[in-house]
Image (cartoon, rainbow, N blue to C red; front, side):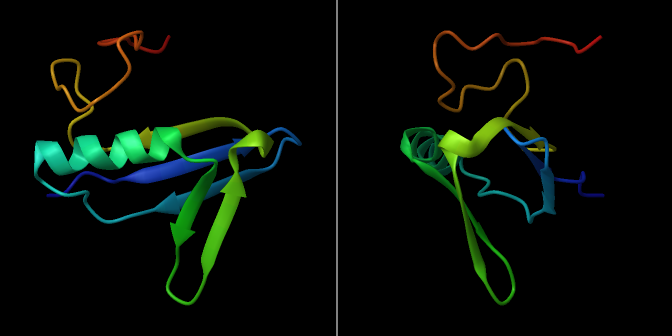
Length: 90
Protein backbone atom coordinates (compact mmCIF):
# COMPACT_ATOMS: atom_id res chain seq x y z
CA UNK A 1 0.00 0.00 0.00
CA UNK A 2 1.29 3.44 -0.93
CA UNK A 3 1.92 5.77 2.03
CA UNK A 4 -0.13 8.96 2.15
CA UNK A 5 1.75 11.89 0.71
CA UNK A 6 0.72 15.33 1.72
CA UNK A 7 1.91 18.90 1.75
CA UNK A 8 0.86 21.44 4.38
CA UNK A 9 1.70 25.10 3.84
CA UNK A 10 1.37 27.41 6.84
CA UNK A 11 1.24 31.10 5.98
CA UNK A 12 2.42 34.11 7.96
CA UNK A 13 -1.21 35.20 8.45
CA UNK A 14 -2.05 31.89 10.19
CA UNK A 15 -3.94 30.27 7.30
CA UNK A 16 -3.11 26.75 6.13
CA UNK A 17 -3.44 24.97 2.80
CA UNK A 18 -3.19 21.17 2.57
CA UNK A 19 -2.73 19.00 -0.50
CA UNK A 20 -2.29 15.33 -1.32
CA UNK A 21 -0.13 14.38 -4.26
CA UNK A 22 1.03 11.34 -6.25
CA UNK A 23 4.29 9.54 -5.69
CA UNK A 24 7.41 11.47 -6.71
CA UNK A 25 9.81 10.00 -9.27
CA UNK A 26 11.40 6.78 -8.08
CA UNK A 27 14.84 7.77 -9.35
CA UNK A 28 17.01 9.25 -6.56
CA UNK A 29 18.64 11.59 -9.09
CA UNK A 30 15.24 12.91 -10.26
CA UNK A 31 14.09 13.42 -6.64
CA UNK A 32 17.31 15.27 -5.86
CA UNK A 33 16.90 17.56 -8.88
CA UNK A 34 13.28 18.33 -7.94
CA UNK A 35 14.20 19.17 -4.36
CA UNK A 36 17.11 21.37 -5.44
CA UNK A 37 14.85 23.18 -7.92
CA UNK A 38 12.19 23.69 -5.25
CA UNK A 39 14.69 25.07 -2.75
CA UNK A 40 15.97 27.64 -5.27
CA UNK A 41 12.52 28.90 -6.31
CA UNK A 42 10.58 31.89 -5.06
CA UNK A 43 7.17 30.21 -5.26
CA UNK A 44 5.55 26.94 -4.29
CA UNK A 45 3.73 25.89 -7.47
CA UNK A 46 0.81 23.47 -7.14
CA UNK A 47 -0.91 22.01 -10.20
CA UNK A 48 -4.48 20.98 -9.45
CA UNK A 49 -6.89 19.33 -11.86
CA UNK A 50 -8.15 22.57 -13.41
CA UNK A 51 -5.85 25.27 -12.06
CA UNK A 52 -2.35 26.18 -10.98
CA UNK A 53 -1.74 27.84 -7.62
CA UNK A 54 1.41 29.82 -6.87
CA UNK A 55 2.34 30.71 -3.30
CA UNK A 56 5.21 33.18 -2.76
CA UNK A 57 7.76 31.84 -0.29
CA UNK A 58 7.85 35.31 1.30
CA UNK A 59 4.29 34.69 2.59
CA UNK A 60 5.01 31.20 3.97
CA UNK A 61 5.91 30.45 7.57
CA UNK A 62 6.50 26.71 7.13
CA UNK A 63 6.10 23.82 4.70
CA UNK A 64 5.63 20.19 5.73
CA UNK A 65 5.99 17.23 3.38
CA UNK A 66 5.00 13.78 4.57
CA UNK A 67 5.29 10.38 2.95
CA UNK A 68 7.91 11.71 0.56
CA UNK A 69 9.93 8.73 -0.61
CA UNK A 70 13.60 9.45 -0.05
CA UNK A 71 13.32 11.60 3.05
CA UNK A 72 14.39 8.87 5.46
CA UNK A 73 17.36 9.52 7.76
CA UNK A 74 19.76 7.55 5.55
CA UNK A 75 18.57 8.79 2.16
CA UNK A 76 20.66 11.33 0.31
CA UNK A 77 18.44 13.35 -1.99
CA UNK A 78 20.07 16.73 -1.91
CA UNK A 79 19.08 18.18 1.45
CA UNK A 80 21.40 20.98 2.55
CA UNK A 81 24.49 19.90 4.50
CA UNK A 82 23.06 21.78 7.49
CA UNK A 83 19.84 19.68 7.48
CA UNK A 84 19.21 17.81 10.72
CA UNK A 85 18.69 14.18 9.74
CA UNK A 86 16.98 11.38 11.64
CA UNK A 87 15.09 13.75 13.97
CA UNK A 88 11.93 12.74 15.85
CA UNK A 89 9.25 15.27 16.74
CA UNK A 90 8.24 15.24 20.41
